[in-house]
Image (cartoon, rainbow, N blue to C red; front, side):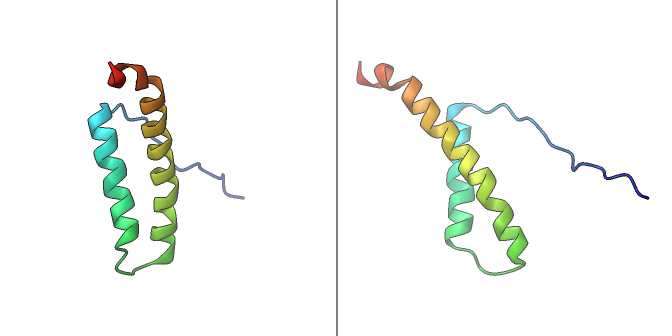
Length: 68
């Protein structure tokens, strides 16, 4: 019986500007999907959603700064 190895994962630290840019890039890639393996497209939804959560969290935490 083979041992099930988990796929490696990574933690990345981004500036807010880089997070916005990466979110927009992934979102655009999905919007203009040119075809290919459906699994590749499906794998883009999770990072898109996680990046969007980060964008929303940043905006929520810093809304008072933007209004000053």
